Length: 120
Image (tube, rainbow, N blue to C red; front, side):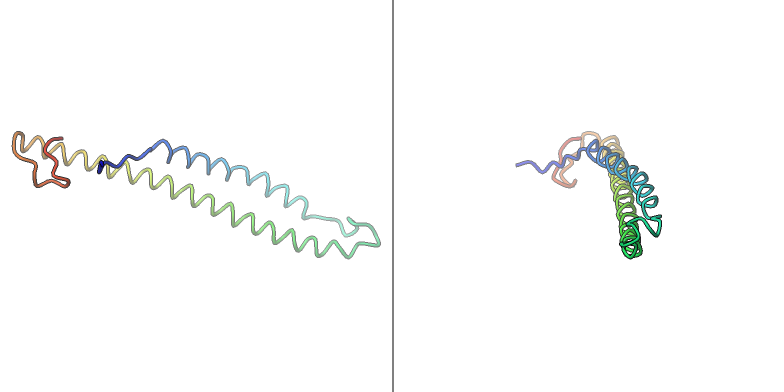
């Protein structure tokens, strides 16, 4: 059993790009929803003109829900991107520290390092 941890950074990058693409599609959806919300009072005909106000109310609620969903997707994409950035930064910092230790203590035992590593 190995204690190694492998992270697919390309999966984080790809996931972030996918989320941003989905978020980009919400612009068209919201534009269409806003256009359809401008119903004329007689959109359903004279006999059914009472349908227009409730339809506009429901459409307003739907538009608000779409905006919240779009914001949630945007925040998720930003969080995935920040996770990628943080991982790369921490990994690079750890690599620099281990390299520095290896250069300073060449030939000495590494038994005190995490995981009992004996070489870099």
